[in-house]
Length: 253
Image 1 (cartoon, rainbow, N blue to C red):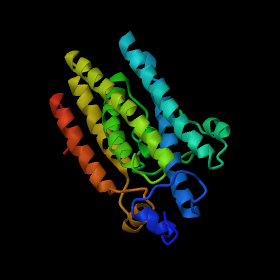
Image 2: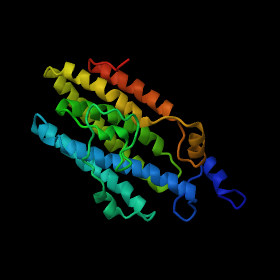
Image 3: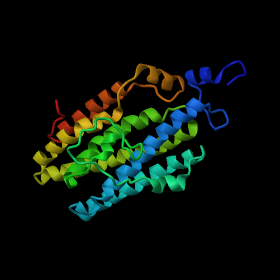
Image 4: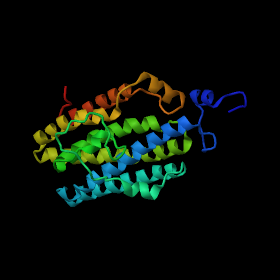
């Protein structure tokens, strides 16, 4: 950034920041919100999968679930460490929220966040069993892939680098889910899994949020967004519909 260029112009033109010295208050606030949503969702997601590890039908499945719990917790830790550079008390943060808290399965909260933390609304719902957890993981991994592709290009370079390192590991969670789904289909659970698709589809779709034109313009000007929520959701919809089709299932109309 040269002396004649303002920070706003620099960010809006694709510039990146590498340290905290030039971070303006509004940029800091939006960046912390983004990080808190990711960390809280990873910790809540890990807690949910921890509860179903022993529901896995075999050792391989339990290892896969344990791996997901470990890696999601590690991903939360990576981003939480960056939050610590902004003054967040990371030790208190990790232990302060009831990450295992869930609503009733039939609760309808739309995209409303938890009263306890910043987790995405989808992580407020419990699993009904192993196959249900596999389907949720399959659909949510697809959503995470779209979101991380977006966040891997944000203007705060340390966080963008963290997201780029996290992305392939989260993608592997989706591969594990697909492997698990194929095995369950072979065991005759296709109908039960299709019911889980119907349940989780709108909840995962809601994790992309809505589009507020003014807010999107602000985030874009700060280099924190490039694509609208609708475009990310549409890409997820197309990708997951094709994935489900290969498994002999279908996306809700």
